[in-house]
Length: 118
Image (tube, rainbow, N blue to C red):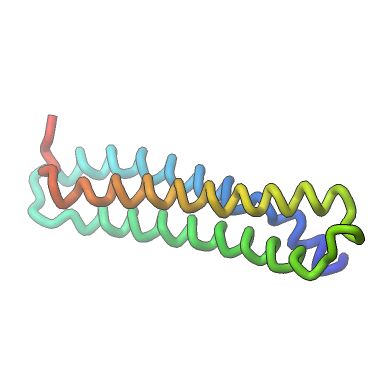
């Protein structure tokens, strides 16, 4: 396979990795907050947040590599499938940033809310 074709299949990685990381982050935070209610340090919550940020960053990096590989092509020479995948890669990067923002907002709640809320 050509390298351009390999990165073309990874164009939407940021979108899928971001959604999966956000869903896992949210569910694991709920479970761990209940488990560590009496503890004074929320270190397991921070480790879940760091892991989710890393997953989003890897997905966004793969989508960025897809955009960079398509940037060398000229519009007239690009196949229709690659134009669509370039668009998907750009949307995936924006989606990854949106999911990263959501994860960071949920991680910021650890500062302001006690673990035994509710």
